[in-house]
Amino acid sequence: MRLDKLLAHCGYGSRKEIKALLKKQTVTIDDKRIKDGKQQVDPETESVAVDGKEVHYQAYYYWMLHKPAGVISATEDAHTRTVLDLLAPDDRLLSPFPVGRLDKDTEGLLLLTNDGELAHQLLSPKHHVDKRYLARVAGGQVTLETIQQFADGLTLLDGYQAMPARLAVLKQTEAENEVEIIIQEGKFHQVKRMFEAVGMKVTYLKRLQMGSLQLDANLPLGAYRPLTAEELAALKGMS
Image (tube, rainbow, N blue to C red):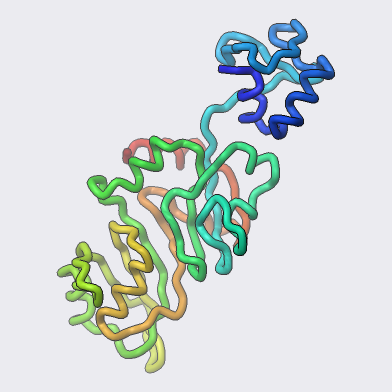
């Protein structure tokens, strides 16, 4: 690959910044100073260094984000903060994107990566990847009949036929139900629309799990961390 692209991928700055870096003659390939960003380099067999420090090339990055409400699952937006705005500047340079989406007012687990192939595998309908949510629902009681309706596959108000879903009541009061719901789709406002179909309203929604990947209970809201080797291996084993 081109040297300037490798440096950009590794977080060494914009195209303009990398051009200036090369001009300073501080970049080497196998100890030879290189000024041309178009120079081809094989990171598997050649050693690249900046200011004498070796550049460690990594093709793909994977992060678990504890998404807060108020940010959107997009890479850019002119008016609203996106999940990428929660990342450190150097990490944003690696061109990550969210795998799937969470609504603006939904919290919880979101996978960020630059691995398009893995993202496609996880989002493909034919793989039926479970997505587990915690929800608070108002507007009536979740009954055994409600649970069966979800299990049979609801017809939403716009006529869309949803796939069967698993619904369980965790806590219940006269005013509110706290439930766990597991779906295998990711349509726009999916969970909210499913409850609307039975005359109820979601007041709080949080994703806890996607496939084998579970939200780290110790990860603060708005924070992110790299996936562990075990988490990544389990995800890739699903695809």
